[in-house]
Image (cartoon, one colour):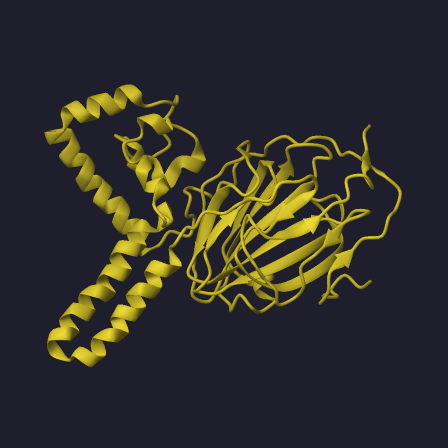
Length: 338
């Protein structure tokens, strides 16, 4: 089958001879281009960092007791931030670099992770949606019929940053979707260097109405990350996979046969901010959140093509991150150990 052929129906790999389990991989050094969880930067990130300087000045001068308590609870051997972190809010953008951290029970702001909205998008949520709602209030006084426009836009931003809970399906050999959206590509690859052999690539397009949180397809260890700046083409276009700004997360399944996979976060026409807060060596559960792409994008999953493999999704089908099964491996068709 030609390497670029796309499929519109479920794919089932025919049974073949068993394949040896590959050697375990060691975590790679972090890509030097990745200097924060949002390597592309952005206005909201700069505003939040600027506010952090004001907040830390206030805490040092008027909340010294609080600063002392948080300093005693701080863990880690080094500081990777461009400033002295006083509490968990300060390491938000740098937690993928290692360094100082606070245990969850010691984090007075841990409740933000339990909100039905993505914590890394709260600044955009307050600023952008708040701006729209403020405009709606002004227009109500000037020309009430027009106030519905910014009000609706504000609600759309609130909807975009939602973070619903997901039930991850249990079972051997299951690979779940890393993103919400429409399946726009199912392509066989003759060989992928990281996978180490034949592979399949599934592309998922995320519209502005989809949940934009990315989740791990299997229980895995992060081996490496690669960030590449690029264009911001419409993520529906196949060339966006090659030309757009993107971040590739290379993972290795935590249990035999230790399959290698790649989750690729790709910026889109509107979405221009990729967020990924994991680092090489991190162990992730199946369906665990590891990042997001802000405002419309594309996510790709590359996985090994093996005997007994089945792809139950079709082109045009809608899937949910951490919940929809993209791939099912027949464990009994199996992989022999070495």
